[in-house]
Image 1 (tube, rainbow, N blue to C red):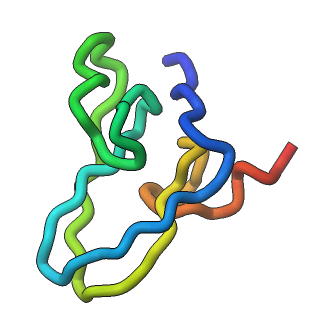
Image 2 (cartoon, rainbow, N blue to C red; image 1 turned 60 degrees about the vertical axis):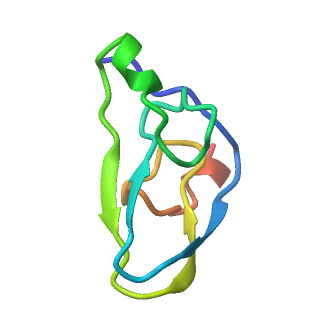
Length: 80
């Protein structure tokens, strides 16, 4: 499988609402980053990652798509 497209080389701040479902783009093709817009369906290699917010808070979703802890940023964008 080829690597996902890097959408951003920085984390994307998201204000979560408790109980709401979020679908993180894993392929990097979505025009609505960091959220999925269905663009992955063109090649079928990736699926969005569903995340249910357990509480209302601010978090950082991965923008480079290389995180080892999806959908969260783990600093992979800053590693060579």
